[in-house]
Image 1 (cartoon, one colour):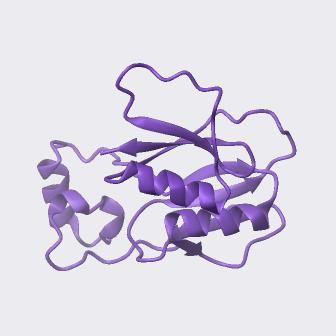
Image 2 (cartoon, one colour; image 1 turned 60 degrees about the horizontal axis):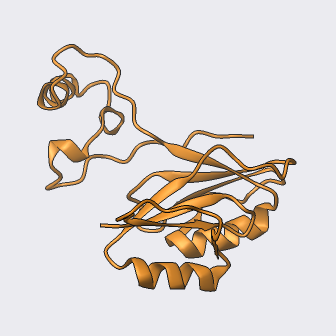
Length: 161
């Protein structure tokens, strides 16, 4: 079963307010919560959501864990179940990637854009890990991305920054 990512980390020293989320703050941090909301242009205390995890449908949990941990330099948050695994950045900063077992081989309605300063090198590295170039994709003139599929056929893009 899905589990939310365990507790938010305490704010780090020297982090700008833009890198903090309200989840980083305890309920007792009312003034800091208000300052953060105001700094972000939200003077009312509306809920500010952040992405905790992207859920990715896969047909083989162990193979997906192997590919995505190496592709993104992520690690398992906890031991995976037969139908679910959650990966988190090895360095602790960033969005989680949850892998959910699906039984359909139909194309999934999702994809991830992965940004890089060296597109050619990353495409080569990912193909070496088992990704496949999507040879059916029609690129527009000046496209700054390359479409790949993971070993299970789910598309993702490598975007030149």
